[in-house]
Image 1 (spheres, rainbow, N blue to C red):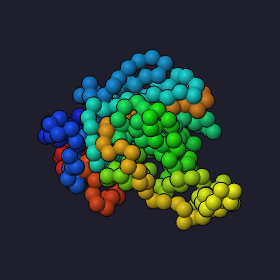
Image 2: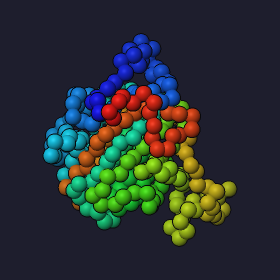
Image 3: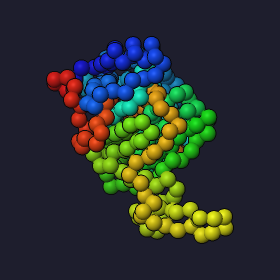
Image 4: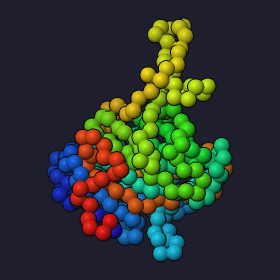
Length: 263
């Protein structure tokens, strides 16, 4: 696979206009296996760290979290508008029970106070969040999914952003969202808020949505991150990241028409 490929024309247009152009469907925007061109990523050491590591000749980007209830992430030095992103993620150290870490993708990152994140956990859950003006908000409640391979297994995480609409996949399975609270007693049901103050809430499968619609951030950078929910000693490895222009209807499995030969 060719490493760290960036389409220079898009970067030039963005610099001239201040607005990132919408890519063609299937257009290759970025690809890396972290074997080279890693200066495009924010790499740092310490208790919270992002480093490229190599084991048996295979380079991966490692996020390390050696503090309880803390997180770390790294950003790619490139802006995107619409995108279809896929990356392989694997937990290689840390708890695998109820305190399993969360890890995944940041997207439409404006600055450290404004971005979206799609995370999965080592014990089989996923969530979508937004940080806006420094305030963290749960956009979709944590939900279990059989699509997640638990423990020290590789998971393919995919996020598609088309304008203000976002779609999420785990291992080629599109995952549903609940924008309130999942019903703990009835899987697949989501809370329907009361119509008026003081009224009773209800639960319905009709409240579950297939996509997130949110117009907070129209463009931004992408990143990879992890966080601990109790025990430190977290190690997450990321590899084989691809970003392409999204199709009108998501291609399953992931497809990029301009992918170089040999990838």
